[in-house]
Structure formats: structure tokens, C-alpha cells
Image (cartoon, rainbow, N blue to C red; front, top):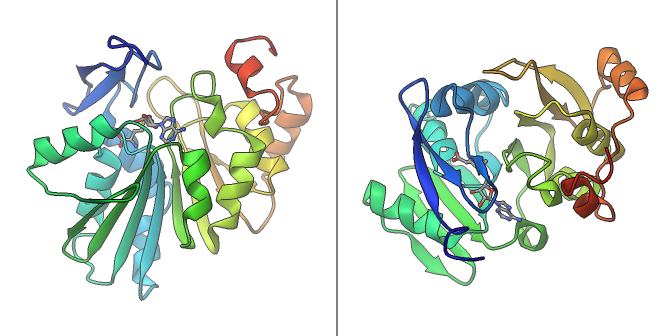
Length: 249
Ligand SMILES: C[S@@+](CC[C@H](N)C(=O)[O-])C[C@H]1O[C@@H](n2cnc3c(N)ncnc32)[C@H](O)[C@@H]1O
């Protein structure tokens, strides 16, 4: 990772909230149409967090990619009135984003082994620092919600493979909803191959649709038909580098 590649630019999005543009991935952490609005739509509402918390004595949420911390902040706001124990686990490969969050919010993380933790009232944040593909093996929780919020499949294909979605499925509670902003046929094929059942998610910004997934039920027939027609490849651990380099489609 060179110096330039390791840097971020701050971008103001259309709802007035800020996101980061990563020079390493050549992509922003959020849609230019609104970082907070996108987070609320795809994750807080997409995973039905406020409904889930009402029926539970404890709640666990998994986020793929801590980034700016907006996913965590918006979750804290949404769950502010509930006093059950809540665990929010996140993965982040870039330690400087955790330091940035700490400085910006004047919070003090406890760092131990490969984790950064923070207690905010009844909400415990645990960030696994390093490659999520490795760190997922040491996560012991079962989750009620999964925010699949890696960079886009073309830039961050290692976090959109069938094998990755299999690992996530192992951590899902029966009622777990996994939600993502992506509606790509390739990632949908990978999710289906891993055993997830898909439904259409909301439209946001310049994207026409998004994806929600559960481990029970059936995939919506419209999605099944679309995937049958689509020539897009399933992304796997074997082909993800070729996929990223545009050699497959
Ligand atoms: C789209 S951003 C996440 C945005 C975030 N949810 C937020 O609220 O700001 C994707 C994040 O995934 C992280 N990431 C990419 N590859 C990773 C990997 N293999 N393991 C862990 N984190 C990774 C990036 O560093 C980046 O911060």
C-alpha cells in the first residue's frame, strides 16, 4: 500500500453528511446521494433493526466494513431508546479508520489482540482489525442482522464470493436479515449458491435496486428468473481476482 493509496478524501454528500473517498479502492464509502440516508435505508430499515429489537432480550449486528463509522452511529441512534444488551461487531482492514473515528468522536477504544472495543451505554462495539476473510473464523456470535457493506464487487470482490457468503451464513440466526446496497447479478448468484434466499431491496440514489437475504424461505421468483437469464458469473474464491480485473464479464 503506497502513501497515496492509503489516503482518503472527505466528500460531502447530498444529505449534508460526509463520507470518505478511498484512493486505494478508488471508491467512496457511500453513495454521493447521501451517506446517512443510504445507511438508514439499506441497513437500519433494510435489516428491520427497530422491529428486531422489540422482540429480543439481546441483539447482535454484524457489519462488513467499519469505514467512517456511520453504520455504527446510525445504529446507536436507532436503538437509543432500547436498553437490552446490544453487540455490534464490525470488520475493518485499515487501522487508520479506527483511529480517525476515535479522534473525531473523542472516544477511547480499548485495543487488545486484533480487536478495538468500545462501550456506549448498552451497546458494545467490537471491531476486528485486519482481513475479514481471516477474522470471521474467530467470531463466535450469531447475528440478527448483517450489514454487507464492503466496497463494490468490482473493487472489493474478495468480500462478495460464495465462500464469504457461506461463512456469513454460518453466523446468521434463523431470522437474520442480511442487507446490501448492491443488486449485481454476480453477487446475487454468489449469495444463492451459498444458500441465502433473496428478495428485492429498495432503490437509492442512482441504483435501481438493492438486495436483502435470509437463510429461510425462498428467493423471489423475479430474482430467480433474472439470474437464470443473466450471463454474469458467480464470484468465487477461485475467480474473484479475474472478476476484479474485468476478465470475466
Ligand atoms: C464501503 S466501506 C464501509 C462503510 C462503512 N460501513 C461506514 O459506515 O462508513 C468498506 C470498508 O471495508 C473495508 N474493507 C475492505 N476490504 C476489507 C477486508 N478484506 N477486511 C476488512 N475490511 C475491509 C474498507 O477498508 C472500508 O472501510
